[in-house]
Image (tube, rainbow, N blue to C red):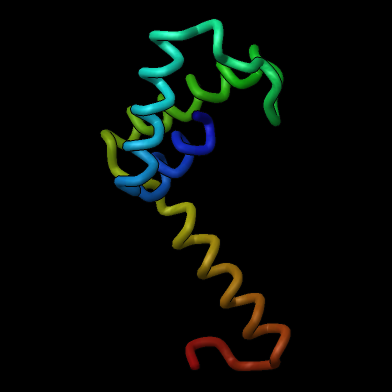
Length: 88
């Protein structure tokens, strides 16, 4: 669910919303099926979800510019490594 929520935060991808909803419904109906093994331990996962939701609320539901900024920085790093002047 955390990865789906991150995708929603940064892209608003319809597939991420769909999978988040599916996981939420299954988890709500059958909480005993949730395996508590994940990349993050359970308390950290809960706080991370709250943090992601806070970011979404702060931006009034708009997607973040994280991916655009990251792509721009990678492009600039490529230009520097190749000796290409800026603005070309």
